[in-house]
Amino acid sequence: MVTLDGDDFVALIPGNVCEKLCQNIIAHFDHNVKKYFTDKDLEKGYIEVENRKGIIEQFPLTSLSIGVVVADIGRFSNILEIGEVGAQVKHAAKSVMGSSYAVDRRK
Image (cartoon, rainbow, N blue to C red; front, top):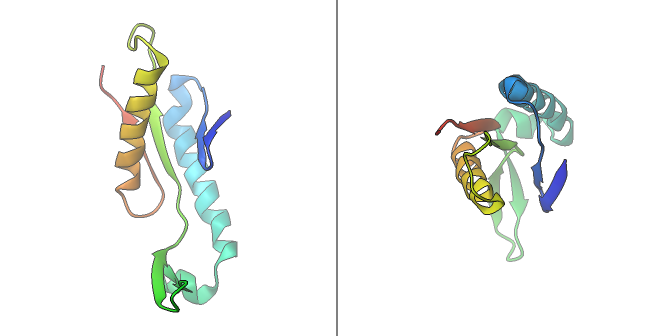
């Protein structure tokens, strides 16, 4: 696994296990992240935090978004193309409320 930027990571895995692995990672994350929130936060589905100006703001509970790129031989001409597609599928996963994953299925 390689860290890209802060909370972005890359993992190279066999294609035949990617969906099950994504499901397992999300299940494990969602189960364990709950211990960092109060029962009240979990019930509401968000946290309330005072910003620098003293105004209370609401933020969704922490979630995980996974973007999957299938990099079959010959599909991409360079690593930058893989990164661009990765950014697109990560954006698609982030558009869903809560933890999710999106797989780029284009050929």
